[in-house]
Image (cartoon, rainbow, N blue to C red; front, side, top):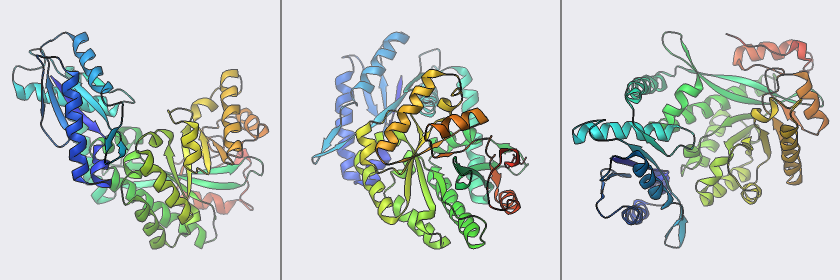
Length: 406
């Protein structure tokens, strides 16, 4: 059994209409049927979910069928002269190994599908029993996460960004932390994928944006620091139809100038709905909100898309900075990124600076800004204010850089 869930379909319904969405579903089903064998069968069990019954229990055969289904979605769907794209995640279960009833097989395939969806670029996944244990833990954590959103158990820590020439702070990045009712700190890489999978990102994103705007407005009003605060936004949130209006409303409510908010997206966001992403990027620019591309060099965006989306900054992923001092390949990649950014009139921020040697190399090659533990650990707002007020001119000798607060 193959459990197939479409990725990004909700955005089509939200941004165009359910009528357009229904037409996409019809074409998806036609492509799926054409990809299956004569003895296989296909059914739709939910809004954007399908089940395919395959007359084989051979893993290689099932993987081959899955890849044909995924391949059938690669070309855009032309609806009312609009090219729309969707992808899919597929979970696989086998009879009788994973269940002897239809309910058991659907449950196993569904669990495998969510495993595929939550893994980086893994679009198919075969069920195993360990996944059920993980699924139960994830479900329990998702329930706690919903409660945490309602009770506002989250907090923001802020990591300073510095001008590498003057050593002055030039920005902040807001980083979410979840400290549950027992005081346990749950890592973002543990709960953010769950929030994405269970549709909780819009609420979480709104909370982060609201809190970051309020906190930065306070820093500016009290004369502590006057720099932009950067907030990382997921693809689903950035592509929601009311995203730009939500952001500008939150700035207005906090009395934060729009040029003191920066939206960060990873480069793969540009691979979703290019038309909508471009529209939102232009609207943000028009509102005075800058846009930066996070983790540049790790995704699949093209240079033409990079140029068309009007980014103000590129952030070099920490994986390229880590071995920068003695890895000639990483040095070549970083030089290329710097060249591309400067040719497109963008500034560059290097992430993950952890040594003086890395800082000096980047500064000497023309990288304007940087962040990382060598410069400053993320701090809660109170500790950040305390450190900033202890610095006469907000300069940053590394020996006095703010350190992690537990």
